[in-house]
Amino acid sequence: MKLKILGIVGNAQKKETLEVLNQLLSWASQRGCQALVDVVCARLMGRPEMGESPSNILNKADLVIILGGDGTLLSVVKYLNRSEVPILAINLGRLGFLTSVARQELFSVLEGYCSGRYRVEERMLLETGVERDKKTLAQFHALNEVVIGRGVFARLLHFETYINRQYLTTYAADGLIISTPTGSTAYSLSAGGPVVHPTLEAILLTPICPHTLTNRPLVIPVTETVSVKVKEKEAELIITADGQVNFNPLPGDILHLRKADLRIKLVVFPERTFYQILRNKLKWGGQ
Image 1 (cartoon, rainbow, N blue to C red):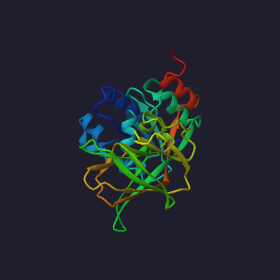
Image 2 (image 1 turned 120 degrees about the horizontal axis):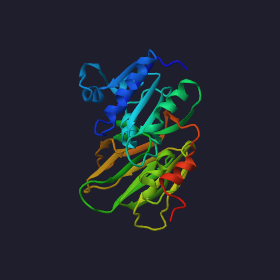
Image 3 (image 1 turned 90 degrees about the horizontal axis):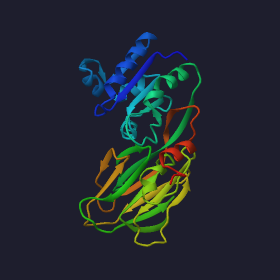
Image 4 (image 1 turned 90 degrees about the vertical axis):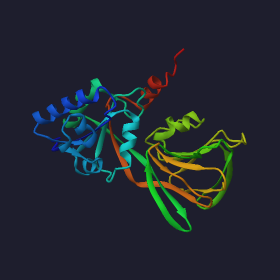
């Protein structure tokens, strides 16, 4: 496969980013491939004039490489504007569930991609809209999860929750996590949610420290829409999407969450499975 435009988005806080970035630019130049570098990486190189916005990179590139950790990849999701662009995420961080390709594997996977020897996993995104007085105030996407939680004050919160406009329950909890299968190994897992294979299509509801112990995590089909009404009048609440987008709701606001039409394509190491990642990253079977 001939790469015409290679996009690169990196985390300038990682000490390896500059070195890997220069290696990638050299690799692209040798193959007659145009490289688009995001503004952060361009400044890191001392060439701010060549910087591109993440939106432009995701719109123009044939392949986008993310240099950093899971947080770097999640920070790019809010700029995603088409489902066709494949993304190769390189782990320069610690855990790396989403960025499971290690730095030393970068060029072997990249060569495999150009030779047609690669595997792409399509992952669903959540689309969230905030309704106030029957008007949509904000919309955003999440690859991992949307969290409704408390702000400054440590008070018990109440979330009136509906599935397809049918009343489910009112969660009394510290917060509520609505996640994708990809996000099942993130915050939802820490809150006691199930591990779900990331290529499945489902929506997970996981209460954070529920006051009623019978309120357990729930997995529902992606054909359903989750609606959560903000009940609190005094507590300060915050909505976060992948830890990247924040919104402060008011009493009476309603969140509507559903499967997004937009998807994300991740280029993964061909011989590595999700079960191997689970075993290695979570130390399953260890002492």
